[in-house]
Image (cartoon, rainbow, N blue to C red; front, side, top):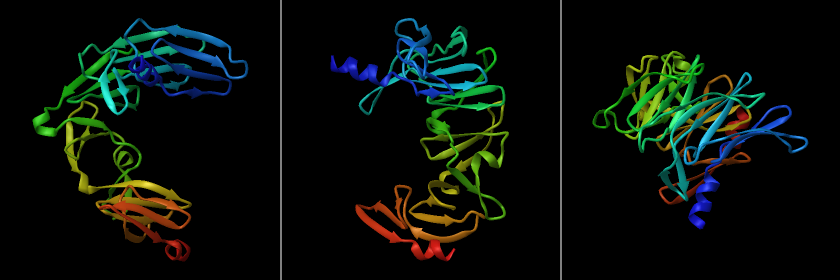
Length: 270
């Protein structure tokens, strides 16, 4: 009983809220609920054993759903259900499309919207699908021996140093490219045809892990770079991406040591 309960608990999507409604998906159905009354406005039932861990999002009046084809039992990832990409009319709940990605034991690891298309990462491939029809446009394989296993599309917290010396968001450095992180600590820069334009090593990147007032904190190796709102580097201290701020003190756990760095003078002098 406990195993089934844990799986069901983990087979729930994120919750979306608009001005008057709540949307969420479970293993059994996608539902729209009136926020004020709690009344179910519509629900779309899924066939047995198809839905699993999922993400839903809204564009215009369409509810999109990415079903990953996985579940979690504690920290253990299990293949569960089938990966699929679906769209539903936000007013009626009617299905616009539901495209099953019928590849056994190969869950969707992450996705990213780009223009009118959506891209999915799997362990050793990336696929491009139409947001209008739900049809696959193309896919490309990336051999594990060459690149390692693909993990996820790079998020907004990843930065790279520009020729000017300023730190810029990696995704914004070239909006025509997709950036995919691998388990070999490399980032693949892909064009819209999924061809690799370059490979970026992890040591070329900085991770923005903390923001306080007008300051950003970037981790690189075991050091943290502090940048003001103009993008000027004002200090560098020894701290990893595990660090966190309380007041003006930066706390970090590194090599089994717990450190506290008072940044009052650094932040106030700026």
